Length: 439
Image (cartoon, rainbow, N blue to C red; front, side, top):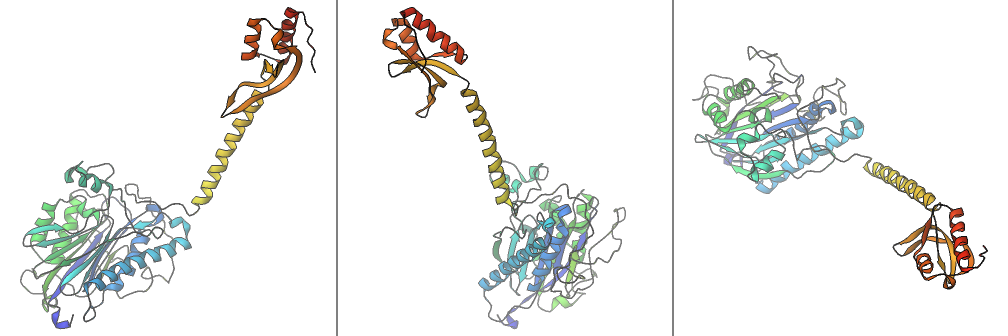
């Protein structure tokens, strides 16, 4: 595609707020001429802010003008590759510090080429398209409640209050490679795009979002969406990116119709945990009034701006009590399984040894060959194996016994001790006038 074919441009605004409940912001966002992305970190004490920051810093490398004659397949490949690199970078951080093994992040990425978007999506952050007064959700949540909605078991409204609404089924965690949703969205002038974390879409329904997106500039809409989310009681961090699709050349004009005199942006914006925030009070009555809107931020090859390569900040975060992500198997799962198997084998062995010791204290009188014999063990068999063996053989033949006694001995007569068994044989012998001797 030549530069002349790029008929459209983006006018965008990004904002992130820590919210009224959380102490720290674990959302990260980036908006540039060719790229929009929102990542929502998961992990609490395991540093969800680090995961989202790292992912955004890798994804923002996509924000370059497309090459001439690029293809749709190449755009999709670029997005998939960037998500894979984010996965690899988080894996490096986990290798450096195993305490981060539970960290992960969502990622919603929109790569723009002048006519269309290549979308990549993992988790429950969302992308919307507002076109001709109609709102369309472009992405599909990878959550437990979404599966219930898809199966028709609950409604969208019920999902907002479901006790497991924050259970994510897919995330970028550096340990398990996740297949993202990848697709193309054609654009036209007049479209408005909105990317957000679940701090927005978790409390605002489609009707409210559409109302806010209906008027004003991108900057105005982004601020109003954050304000509306906080007023609706969002307990999460709130991050929103709004981008207007305009004819080429209009994005640089801050006074075009519909702009309402607000600030517009042609330079990249990095917000949330990925940025060193410039604090300013926007919302009266808000706990701190923090916002993540920034001055343009130059690129940084590292996973975190303002830190040397590989550095991990050591300021601890409070545990994130309300949010969970799929947990990758433990790095030493094989060892744990071996230990569990060893414990199980030990328990079985102790039980078997106890049972064997008890069995060796059991006796019964039976027949071995034609002779009355004292057996040690149990008068039964297990899977074809006798659980007893001859212990004291006598010279008393079973054929000399009375019919009743012979039938009883052939079936086996249990005795409480070896002495009792000998006394029983003596009584049998006395009844036939034979003296039994033990070999």
